[in-house]
Length: 334
Ligand SMILES: Cc1cc2nc3c(=O)[nH]c(=O)nc-3n(C[C@H](O)[C@H](O)[C@H](O)COP(=O)(O)O)c2cc1C
Image (cartoon, rainbow, N blue to C red; front, top):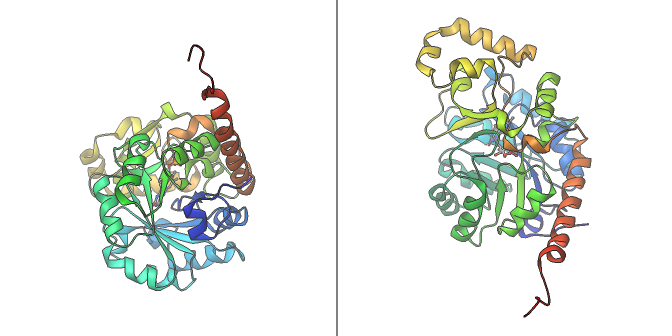
């Protein structure tokens, strides 16, 4: 089964499924597997900050190599590029199919990305940001609801997606936030989106980077176990601008430090080192595992290609089942 949309045509792909560029989780093997299965994989370069263990120029080169012959894209956190704009130039050298920018003003980078022949994808969290992205030449706009894993803001996917679709037409929109199976893809298409951008569900795949303990935690946690917090960013010494917070799985560290950022900051460098050590060791009581409300729908760890096909097949089933279930051609008494 194939689902053709404006976004599959624009990107020249078979399925309207985009892999979210999850920083340090979406490496080249995962992105390549999603593209090989007919979606679009995006490598997660995040902050382009060598200190975090992912996103350095060497890391980016190595991950593009792991994608093999499959055309993939790359994503950056926009405000972080202000500190190291050369990271974008370096990534464009690998001729990515698309570049996704999230969280910040895309104006300084938009022309460079499009001139390099990459499709400019902008992820937004509000209508105001959607209109700004369209005005700056975004070719695909991702409307991200608060259900999403990782960083985001407060609007919910269900009302945000159709509002963005209406506001930025004819620019095609992908829906993100809480989409973890084919029912979510079918619902997104019903809202007027032309694709989905999926993060958390792809965390629990064989090709995703990250510690095995975190993948296991994802498989056994549910949406009720997540919270939006800035505690993990404060612990890592990353100063996110308002209004962004990160949705992650609640753990002992979050229980202790949520909404106590000033006190946490006062713990200083020793705390930061302890935090990064826990992250490297996969100590999930302390480390951050960014994940979204779609966790309830995740119980296994398939290969990413199998997951793309599963989501598309489920969506096709859902789309064909609804008319039979709900449309009554001859209402009784009518
Ligand atoms: C582990 C993780 C890391 C993420 N890192 C990034 C990132 O570096 N840049 C970015 O634009 N979005 C990032 N996101 C957010 C995704 O782009 C996307 O909006 C989100 O995953 C969609 O919601 P879902 O997780 O419910 O599928 C991340 C999400 C997760 C789960």
